[in-house]
Length: 171
Ligand code: NI
Image: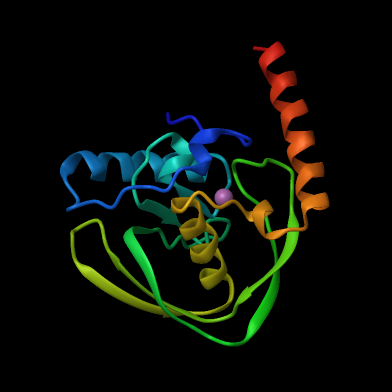
């Protein structure tokens, strides 16, 4: 089982490398990432969150619903964004129990490779768009707290440092 990296950690601040193509090893990683994501009750997980510096993430906006919709995105690129912004509450598996409302574009067009090396284009809005934008940020070393005011960010980071110290002591 892959272990999810908790913030703050320099691993989460790296800009990840694109893949030339998806090979069987990446497919295995993707499978393990889905497992870790569902296990943690998340809707998205990016490779740097499991310590891998590659442009890969997995999402399932319906992870908590009956019918699941797993999607892996490799080398994703947002090629179009709407001018309309929406506010959503975001969380992150690297920040357990922390949530914050933030504004992002409502609709995006994203181009990516799927796990079978096929180029795909997806136009999406609402929750799926939000999850993709959050995960794509991870591949550029950007965390959801980086979109908050410095004050709000510092509070969360301080709490995370304390939390990490506590779980380390209990290990
Ligand atoms: Ni996240």
